[in-house]
Image (cartoon, rainbow, N blue to C red):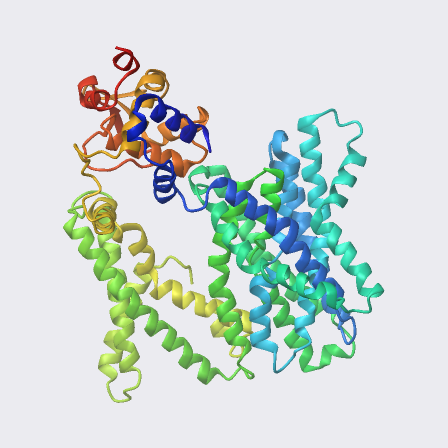
Length: 612
């Protein structure tokens, strides 16, 4: 029971006659319904389970079951060199440009972010689907390359985080021993060491007594880690600033672009000798590129939460990198299934991709242009130029659809010329991807990497409408807010902006009475800083922050529910009466006058009335 719940119960018992008191479970039931399903305390407990039980068990199992036979060690050394290179590059650059108060923690966590891949929860299923029938031994490489980060690189990053922690806490004359001890006490590092020792001691087999228990914990890591990642992501995007945005761009570039290219090049350089002339050499280099594209592992968010450092950058970066890596992995995996580089099927597939993306993008552009016209923004700058861009993108999609049918007609030369001119005329007028296509003219047998770029170029060219749809098609006032209002009315069976004037639930009246008598005066002084139309306004997010600072609520979800109670009871109102209470910094509210909530004190007896 938190302070808010306890104080509400005390006010209830104090002011309401005994025969009118209902079971307290009704209050908690409403709290659980209105507030977040998973509270911050529960999310923290889930994070502890993932980081201290599920992930260590998974690592222990993999270390024990590793098979070192029939391994091409050049691949392992290639990945090792690639990861060390990226790790050192990110670490050194961060130490050079980061501010002194957070230099070491950023260097450690950013370097781990750029090198630790989601090998098990996401990478293993992809590798199994691709190589299960052709190169099944590649599955073992997932377990072999994992210790590269866990045993060599991550401890260095943990050491940098410990240095930052001890520099902020105490004099750091003796921090070397403390840092070493903390790194060894880390359950992730500790279980990797124990797993390798058990690999040789137990003969590469987990005892039957422990097998079922270890398997249960290990199998729970994938879903629990991704679910905890989503919980950790809540509310983090609003904390991003220009500096963190730049850091995200650089980190994602290092993880999704630099890492796969370095991995592929290292295999080409180090895998020499007998294997260099076999088909396995090319397959290994392609596998190295695919491995480098794997997004950052969810466990990095656990590391950031454990040290309470750079959590907003790490969690946001992992979600973004996962979304960005998906199309790259898809195209890479699809190209790896093509045994020969025959240009005929590739051109056909490229044509199909361009046609499909144009059809879907055409629908998005029709919607976006309609929104632009209905909102009447097209006659204002800079929207008049945006509308011209949308029309050019519309013509690109239409031309690509027509070209897909005309290209199959050998006799319709005039139609082809007109369509081709319209296609490339409108395409070059909307270009956002500059044409480094010169390689297509100079090399008739390009590598798979360049083919991936060609497919991404097609998606970027004919899918520009998606970007326009995302920015302009989802207009806040014309589309999003009416949709949310309608959805809430369907969900609750009434308009969410309508506040009931009668029949207010008892817990709402108690909450409002408690706030008005004990907290309102101080809250007005702390959160009201804006005047508009002779009315003192405050942001919804400011009230949420105030409730958390005062200890009236233990989480943002519960604080938003508290604010909803105040609005439902007539203590606060939205400035235009249009919206319910939201934890947002763009929606303003004001405190109502005394007569607005006077009925509350008439319903619930005061102390003096009770004594009289």
